[in-house]
Length: 111
Image (cartoon, rainbow, N blue to C red):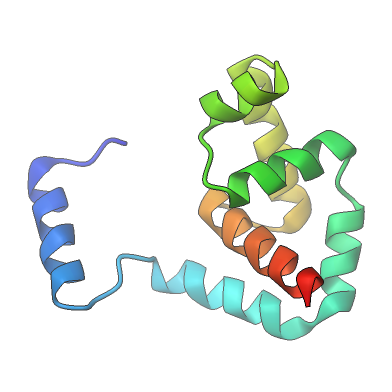
């Protein structure tokens, strides 16, 4: 959302070279969590409330807080609070981590 022009240009060039813009530390944490298996996942997901679970699903779809708020008929600030709570319960610091986690978890459940 708040990227300076030179950072945006640098990011575009990096992607054009085939590099990743994902934070290596965050990527490593997500991959480690995925390798741990279903037990850890089940416990973390089970700790979420119904609202938090639904918001996690919507994060995985790539929706913004505003879009989630509109879809769920909540205030945007309420959604931000839910996101903060679910990140804490999942042991994550970034919504992107949670979105990737939820998308992979959903994909695994399909198979």
